Length: 484
Image 1 (cartoon, rainbow, N blue to C red):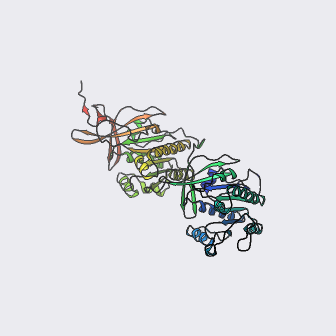
Image 2: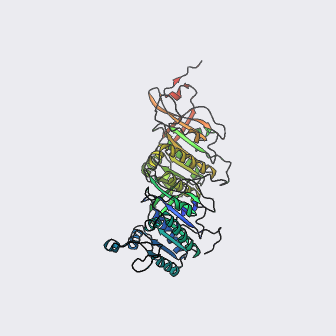
Image 3: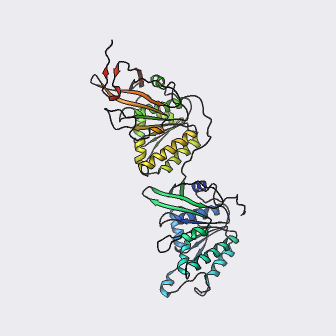
């Protein structure tokens, strides 16, 4: 193992590796903090098994749970600890029966042998590259006072570093036994939290390197911990193509003066049943015709109904899927946090060179993911900005509550996210329920400022001529203008 500060070692958690800008710096000590059940021990398991995968020698110093329990818990998560060395310092039943008293870092004997000798002998025997101590704060109860605890901890960690080990340790932070002093004695802090918004991780301290700051989503699953870093602006991504993406519907493309520009966010807004998703799908169909790949994330509809109703109007959804030009992802309610969802989208775009992303719809997005509404809007803004930086065309489907009456572009207060706003409207004309479409906003170019009739038939989607002979269309009850 090299001591060069530029060298990094993996944590065993891909997302955390990214947060730490490449991993841990070898030969240093890192504190993992968090309440019970936040995943501290599991993170340590991932850290040790990553060392095993790198042909390193690793040592688990357990001061609370017995080795047998740790191995059993790891097996339930499909984590293999068979090549991990243990130094089991957890108390056994004899402590209770015999009333023994432990004093780890003093010459006092425990079972006729000083524990300091047990520790040093085990370390000299295994010569570990990585050491995980869980939890170090247990030693506080076995020393005479806080001063002795700090003194012995500093000496212990210095000893391990002199042996060439990188140290990960956990703590128990309680009101009776705070771990604030450990913050100053370690080179970095990884803090795990759990709340109604889900599990998160952040790194408030990391000596010797920049990190990806912020609160990142965390999930415990088979294999251990997964971290989903918060998105940041992507910077220079794909080379933008100066070629708008049309819908393939003549009237709608005339409204948009050719279509939507690449790397922009388009919001399709309107009340329920007006055809927002169907209109958005026309852009995906046209992208597929050009050999491009799109993905649609369904928050408010099942894949089955989406496929059926599009096939019924002549959109070959299943053929688009077979050719690899379209992916349909139905998002299960409360299955992901906003950062996990953003990670899924980013992975889809980067791995499959996806050029169009449609999110259907915004209200379902806010209800289906963990977090309060303000947080959801911020995360959606970050995701949209990241995709724009990558040159991806984003289509957001947004439902407004009012079917008729006063016109509102959005109910979500997120119109600022959109470069383009296309609205659809129900209207009553001569006792018949009809639909209209118009463009409210287009940042990157000009657009037609008329309203046109929007129709969905078994032959597909049509957009008619401008509604020149009507006024009051936006109110939902237009009136005929008499010819002069």
